[in-house]
Length: 459
Image (cartoon, rainbow, N blue to C red; front, top):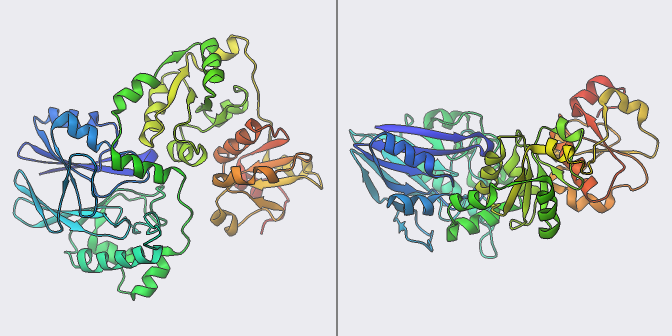
């Protein structure tokens, strides 16, 4: 028996490769399926099954593409109603993989079709649970994503409670829990940085796996949920109908463009230019009206949060050699309309004598001397971060809500913008500048530097 967790840090996502006797099952595959195919080929094995725990909201799955390329069966749990060729399993149904068995446990709550897969080893012993977004390490799946006119958040939370108590908590404490996500994912609110654990330990430390009344569980699991990112329902829709192969996305997106060609395409297609370099490099020079979303941060989730048209034509500015990674990450969250990238990086734009813009930034220690009576400090951290501690005179404008706040930004007085460390504030500053608001100043080092190096009152 071989179990490999294939963890993708930028999405905090875990896919799984299970092998026995030359047969392979893949659980919750990402869109770029070559990784799984190559692994099976190296092991002289064949992919037999593709198990999906639910219709994912935070990434585009590769289930349809992988099935077409390998002939494997796609397996969903009850209530999935797939529109493509797939097996909709019944609760308790067992699939054989070499000397292993995989049992379907329908566990609605995160979504109605949410399903866990219980793995029995060669001796018929319960060995591991692939829990999808039903159980995380330190948390459980948020119950608000699948709400609709007929079913409420509390309805889903109630279903989740019964799924946990009647299907999962009764399993052996020795069982290994392999979830679909870890810390950093927006599919839960309290996930641990660990990516697997035993069920027994989770019963001790996971607030949602305690023997508490249903009403208390519903209150705790629904408390403090932030609005889901814009792209979540878009990704669910894509996963329900299936998407084109990422190979086609790369073919149309990974196109090098000279500065003249880049400028021509940007104007003709009304393309959004996303600059993915480090925020310090962006600060010192960028293409006018481009926005900064750095590849070295939570790139794909921020694109999905800030770019609210999933079909928006996109052009990429990236460090040389990073272009393929950028386009791959965009495709992972369904942004398939990349039209090319700036060949030679930003240096080629400068060398061509094209117009550039810059971001005005100041060191944190200078903020208290420079800020005027009528100036504004905009703190773009999350509301929860702001509530813990903030500059007394600052206004909280979470980056995710920057578009809604745009009309309230002062056009006369200076707006000093900060986050925790500098990544989010550069995104916010670039977006405001792209919308024609030039009286913005980025504060380097973020809140930590402000707290340590200024005399501004902190509350």
